Image (tube, helix red, strand yellow):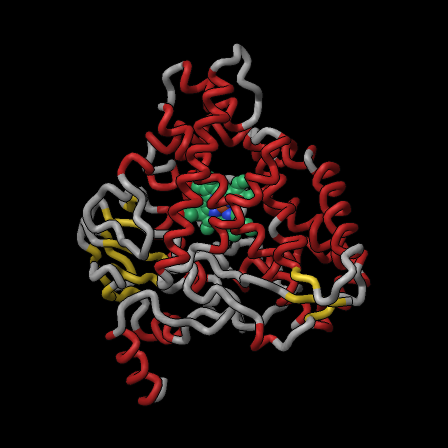
Length: 410
Ligand code: HEM
């Protein structure tokens, strides 16, 4: 490490976290921290202090440690922007055994066999969406609006139990949620909060309808209504879970589609290999997940007991930010980690988190991304970016990385 780099690190550490980042890569300071100061205390934009964890092995240990809590009600829980009120706490922000109730109730929806049974419907949906995209008279076409958004939104509406006639409304609200999560823009935040209110009001309406029926159905909202009848969950839990699924299951897959397409277009040799040998697509998706790690500033924790890690003792009550994006770029675990390489075999990444909160929807995300990329590459072999990369609007301040628009042509 040179002297200049060290002084830059000191300057960065003096700034409130999160720090500005390049468009796709994490801030340079993360690599310096892994080398010099892997467990470090920083000041957050909220004025709170919290510990950043940057090495692969330490992030893994923290996320698997039962002394670490995900409960937002605990003092010291790190705040990086939108802070839901206490009654809005979904199971993402609960600890076992409270959290276990929800995983037990809902995990059957995401068993590999169950999500594989959705594959033919997802294939039809993707084909129809790409037909409509190809039929558009204008060029360029925005891939976000015409592919990345409608596919996961529609799949989510199936599994949640949104009424077929309300899908257009549902797509609109979810889109407002997706485009409004910039913590530095008060107007965007306002639209985001409004979209949350609209979605809660809509979910309450669907739930009331299901409650009035003897058989509430076997979709997720139906399963929750049944659990509420049995006294396992409350009415508020149903609303919180509905909103969590929309926030966690839609924005993520949509951003992976758009940023994943962009990354492949930026690596034409590997893209050509995938076109020639589509059997490589699942491995390429794992590498895209690792390399992009789009969900990172959502993975937040607090120490429920003192924890020794990386030569530091984190006292009970201190906030912890296990930086899964930094772990996924750790050269000690992935040699030359900053290089995108579809042959890396990166299945042990933390793009879906790790430990009890590891993404419940990952089998579904994998099927959706597989169908999307396989179909897109096969059906539009000449797909290309329609503008220079510098003109693409990246969501550099959002806790989930992505792009607002991706103009493409063919
Ligand atoms: C490529 C797409 C996706 C990525 C990158 C992603 C990433 C993540 C990550 C990192 C976590 C862990 C958060 C933490 O530990 O604090 C998580 C949790 C979660 N994800 Fe995903 N996710 C994706 C798709 C989905 C889908 C499709 C669904 C559902 C339809 C979903 C539902 C959830 C839920 C409900 C949780 C909370 C789990 C718990 O607390 O037990 N995600 N996701």
